[in-house]
Length: 304
Ligand code: GLU
Image (cartoon, rainbow, N blue to C red; front, side):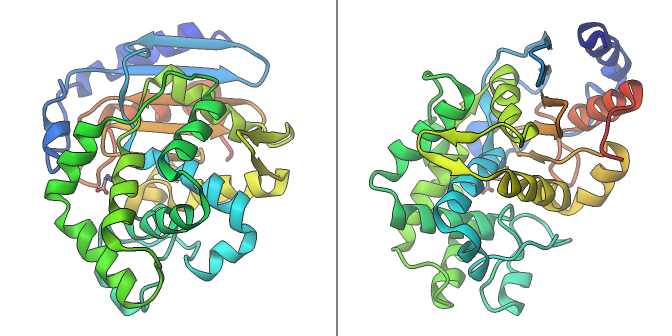
């Protein structure tokens, strides 16, 4: 399979969508990003790689960081994690409060903001230096020591993060989180602020694409079965309330973020990351979804 040629063809086909959608602006720092950018990178478990356009430009990975948080929480807590957070798709938006209230402060899944704030609380309790340890894991799984937080993005989000603060308060009221709200939110926003390029993200996700290889990075170990289950959660919950549509169009487990990134995997074959800041109304990258839809259509490589 000539992935380089395929990616280049895909890029030409999706150019008509280049101005569709709108970048996230509820985090003021994200509104400053040039929306007219696109990058894509793919890595196979056999060592092939292809990248196009701005595949080496770093962007805010936002909710894609929730996959790394889930890996750490599963490694630390095992199945006890599921006492505090569910694993069902929500069908509601990523920052919704309604379901959380109705379901007594137990988030539907770890990829909702509420679920990720619970994971931030768990990691905050268990890690000696939460910010250092989280970054060390992301660096190890990516094989890249230069990956960093962007403090400006984290601060910008905190200053405007009224909805996430409301979610954290509701979680605290129900006893789902144990640490003080401000510390947990700060850590959550820092995790979301990590910046990576498509090439770096795709390489990191290769660890989830190959569950037959030992998963052990910076002391975070997962069994093959845990990696398989993480992929199941990416498939059912990874795309906000558009997980069904993404499964229908693309057919790969993955996770998106409001920075416009999407990372996905085809188990035992490849990992892929795509980035373009313009989002559709559900918060997923317009060009990103189009590119992945064409990738699985052209290659006939998807889980369905
Ligand atoms: N930091 C963002 C928030 O909490 C993440 C949203 C996302 O990428 O889905 O709203």
